[in-house]
Image (cartoon, rainbow, N blue to C red; front, side, top):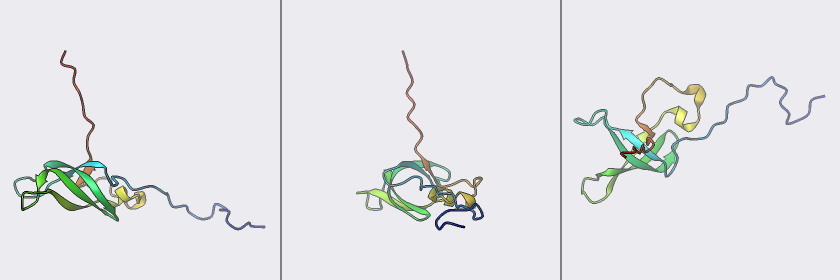
Length: 106
């Protein structure tokens, strides 16, 4: 007798994970623009969608020089929880902001 809703072990379970770098996350985004290639710029995630995040930069202004620049950044499948399809060796364009380190000067 097989009861409904019970897993008998014959089916492969998909690993459930959550998205990383969600809304309000403090991040750094790697630039590939000429003259800035490889530099990292701090910002905040303001929108989270499948395989992309909208980031508002802390120190970069828009073309009018009035508001902080906002940009859509493509993210890896690993950030959206698809561990099985992730390429762990590819360097991404977004990462969490590193922790603040305080030094005792006394």
